[in-house]
Length: 391
Ligand code: ATP
Ligand code: MG
Image (cartoon, rainbow, N blue to C red):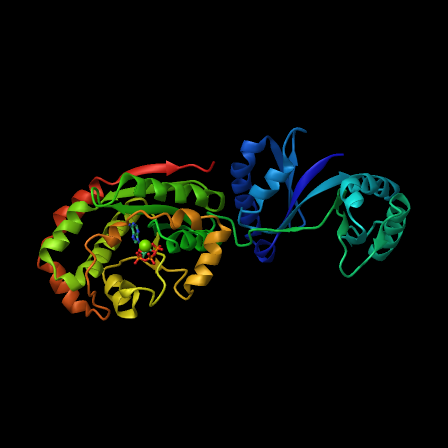
């Protein structure tokens, strides 16, 4: 029996005149994501995208799993494609559900008929096909409230589709339809979640990471690259920028008041990020900050950090507490890597008593007491780029 994967649009279906460009972006991302499984052709019709495998050896369960992480579909399923003839539908449905039917005791049939010229209405399809399933599998009984097996028949424009119910899709809108941003990616729990949240809204992400060898190790950097790899099923390929930050941190330590170390460091991180973003025509920055979580994320500290920013800074986890962030980190499978105990440059030379209410003018004056510009220019110049490809 011929099988394919059906993707049902969510938010895209509500778009107006530009709906097509969203669909094309979704198909483009899907193609990129699914090509490693084998060859597919893609069709679209009635707010649905069909990925049709071109050979029989493709593992469609794996395709479903990968497809459920591509933003743009509300639901997806694997389905058998059959001719729109009722007897053919019944015969194939009975065959298609055999394995599940043998393991189940209760079932129901659901029917959807978007082709209104089909001679049977949905309730008739359910009743008639339900009867034939009962004949074929006499151990089954019908349970419309809580069935162990659901058999869904969809009569669409060109064919009928039989499947066992929808999986939840990734939701959101396709990556690449909302512009681009540069994510400040640490090895922690929050910033990978911030990446996921922005990608869900269609933003194409690059990542920037600051390292301070020998205070931070090569393994800490590799950990962040592994986090990028974990993000690619959602974000697509990620351009990963790695900034040598040691000299800057030493200069802060040697020239600035200790209580302002962190806030000055964060301002310089933002400065370097926006220079690289501007050079690459990236439109905004993203961080994993959550208001009040630590001293550098109080409202006053954020005001001081933003004072140096010339482009929008998005903080998609700003209003979330740690439990909520962790829940997403587990879902996208970054949590276990994030909690590996490697040091981040933020934990190098941390002040004992950071100022939780820094005053912008004081921070500005402290930062201006030393000329950081040559070091900032050098670090920006020596930033390394590596593209992390989706696996
Ligand atoms: P996270 O869990 O994302 O590390 P956090 O709660 O540990 O966040 P901080 O260490 O204060 O908070 O960092 C706040 C934000 O600053 C991070 O979410 C990230 O966006 C950015 N950041 C921190 N350290 C680095 C780094 N070494 N390289 C790039 N960005 C960083
Ligand atoms: Mg951190």
